[in-house]
Length: 321
Image 1 (cartoon, rainbow, N blue to C red):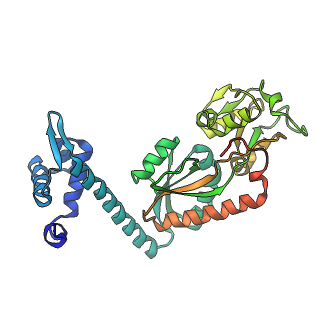
Image 2: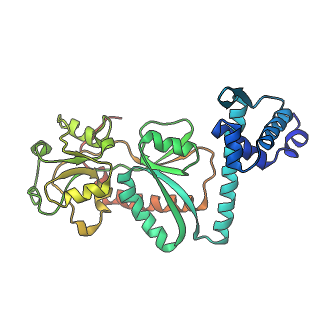
Image 3: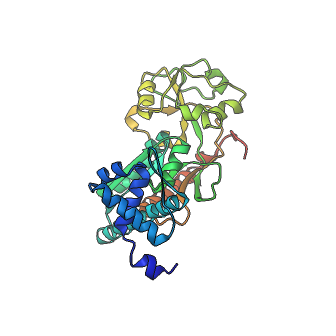
């Protein structure tokens, strides 16, 4: 197949966009409605692409259409093409105005509320035109969004290497037991974790799952995880801690960057660190926007400062590996 004769001069970006929309909807009528064109236009474009490439791109079914092996390959690469085009436009905008642009970040709520909030606060003051989009969720959801180009990078604790991803470790978190103002355990010089198991605790669901940092920390001391409330919301956790009754276990960076007016403090419990480092995760070979590069550079500076504090690697190891 000659590129110049059969593809380079004949396939248009509009055709590839139409292909991806049909693949997404699995129905020509729905795709036509989404694109605000007629069904014959969609059918004709698909037929012309199939003729040029010499392979079927869709199988017709009773419920609509389904991409063939060739159709899936072309749709996948088309998404990448449009993503690169978007990135090039963003880069041009950024070069014209270094303080503008937007990008999406995937993370957990605990990391976003502490570490990432600090970076975004700094950059938003320096570059008020920058737009930050946060995508929060579990590990599978975050990596899916990353691979599907719905976010440019993920900041998370990633233990398992992935062949298509670049994982850049930043630092190891030290877990801390946190209490709000008036908690009866505040001020005690040394506390065994076992002494706290009968207290009311609030945890995030991902943290108490097997392999999660809180689960691993309690198991390192041979304890079951005590739990009164389970909530994904960091804001809700802050509200419950304010009562002075509840305890929680969080990464040290979250406490370090928590709002000072809340009066949250770490109890004197010798806690293990979690061996899975907080890392920047990106897709290998994918071009990042200048805004993302700026964000990562600032995040590396902050991580370096956290390592110099010396507290992020103290304590026993909660997990092996």
